Image (cartoon, rainbow, N blue to C red; front, side, top):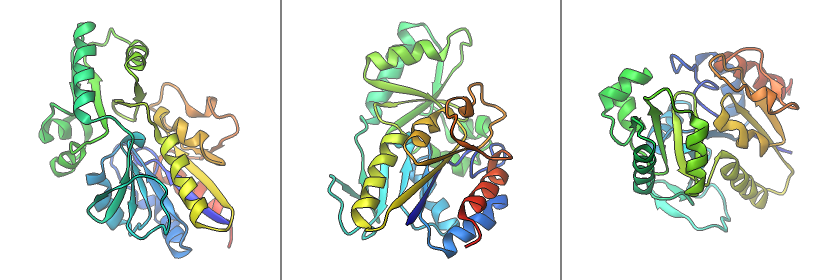
Length: 270
């Protein structure tokens, strides 16, 4: 059996406040030693994930911008029966609308409802660093987006649920991430995970067992797409995932501490 772990980053593998992952090193090293695929599935950009993958010595495919793009190292799979495009050392799969389309849609929605919004499309690296805790260098990478537009509603009287319905009418999707709302195409992490698992099954004779770990609403579709779902507690969440996934495993602690504990438990004593 081929085990595949699929994980969110912020608030899951990474500490929500500090972005530290050191408490998860024992489990990360175990996955690496046993050559078990670890798929990073995040709202972050490819520009952010590529250096992070090098840092943790990860060589597996990854999913960016809430399912907007799948990036696969060249020669990782012998067969990919989907349309791809070359992006550096990777083959990318995407069905998301252009970033400019998302910018126009957000501007129109804000005008219709007389809302003040602040999106990544207009932020400088210093502004994003100020409100997110990222360094300016990290913030610059976070702003290099293709498929998904994070934003904040500065007028607190408007509820995201209203915005979600308006976005849906435009064929778009609104999700709540760890820090920002995200406007994207009618794609999500779950769809991307399903497609990637298809590729693993096509390219491997053994049975595939998929395990997903997440902490926020935008991880729900991903956790529904896997065989074993793990909820990492999120003290900041207003809609706990556990209530939507009654069969999920619940980690004993937030962030990388809980991630490490549950991954080692799932790997067993082998």
